[in-house]
Picture (cartoon, helix red, strand yellow):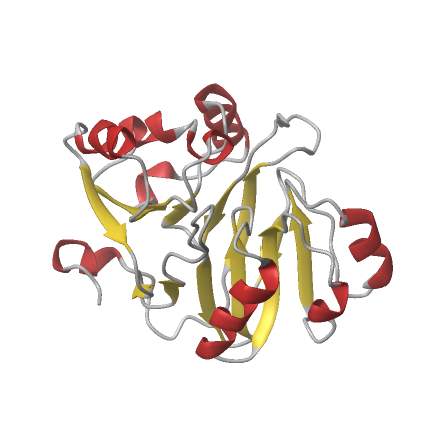
Length: 233
């Protein structure tokens, strides 16, 4: 369900397509900063992860001319510093809902809750965040993680942080929402490349160990991921 006090700022219903913009990654376009970590902007209003450094995140947001006043949702995939280090970005934002896995550290939740503009929502099961974006819910056992499911006219695009629960397992969850169009994000430990065979857009980022193999095998559908890149889904 959409939370009442944020309902007016949700992504417009029936939106045809959406941009996913890479804000933080190990590789960067000219004029932007690269670092170990991940963050992206989904549509105009949802920030997914915050990378490792607040300074670098702010730099890239500024250089990419992101309208931060439109950001109303922040989703953390999991409780690793290369995805949470820039959480102080909430100081620069207006009223914002922050979605964290239920396994998130309590000190981190307290830090977030200390900001007057933040409402923290702990996620265990799959949950709708905006009209077109869902959380998969918390997945995995050792390192628990949530991913995003983005629904557009193209189908379903999965956005992952690191995919610690196993990319194939997360894909299975995403396919409950419809035909899988794309996968964007970190593919940690992923080596069964045939699982991406029917996917129209593949953007391996951050901690993907077999990035070169994926780009080579799926040269018509796979795209290089770097800070400054945008993917239409």
